Length: 131
Length: 131
DNA sequence: AATAGTCACTTTCGATTCGAAAGTCATTAT
DNA sequence: ATAATGACTTTCGAATCGAAAGTGACTATT
Image (cartoon, rainbow over all chains, first blue to last red; front, side, top):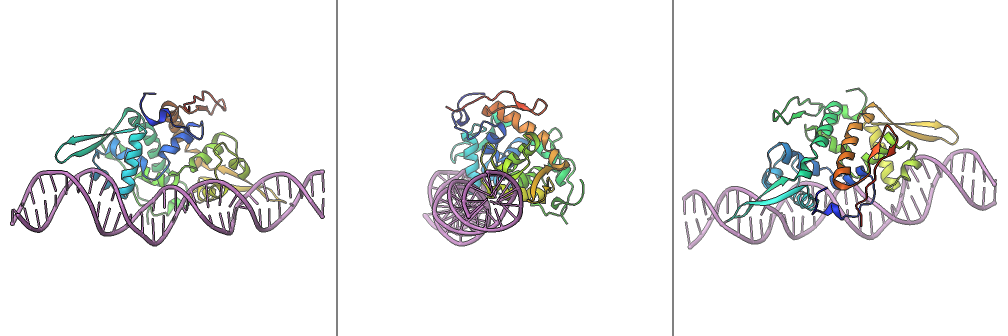
């Protein structure tokens, strides 16, 4: 575990790795931000906000702050005057890819969602179950 | 995908498998219930409620209902007079094991949580990061 | 010089959800 | 009769959510 982020000193309620992870990723939005940063080339506030699921901007703002606090994402200015920011996954954040892949697999198989291929960079088979 | 549960007709907001999965598992408690059913031999309301993280009984009640609605869990009476229930993962529910394993791995590596070995049936290395 | 536009947020505020505690109901045990 | 157990449900104040509008720092256009 690398140094310098909240998770080094944070007092978790549980010693269980899954419970701990849920304290970070256990909501509707956080993993979607990670998905967009990881696979969909979205890096600015604007890009993330206009993502498919339309998460409210105040939620996005909050989640990004937490992700930075947890050391999963860094925020860097990519230009001055006016200053604009880019969000990038850290190594810890990128280490979530296998988690994302497994969740995607399960969601595809049991809920009929799309299957994104990170190598090809596109969604392979977006089955639809609605209607 | 097998027949007969909510996810066959439910109208998801997104076609993304990850977003869809988050509509089911995207909270602090649901995956912990799945964990307990899958690995820790907890099957009754009581057992689940007295699990390590002490989830409130009304939340447990609600989540179990949802899990049944989504077809990830079945509820069966294991005795009459007085009637007592047992919750069991369906095939869909058990298919979450790889997801659980990946999340556990990540939580272990980056948050210092324990590592449970489903084959050995015990937690191998509960690192502690608190303090 | 004035107006419009863009980006990155923050604020507001009503609605929803959470969670701690206590209560309910059926039935068995003492 | 009283206590105990299991499986919930109810209550209710506190925290969180989310839709919409607002803010501040600029740049671009007329």
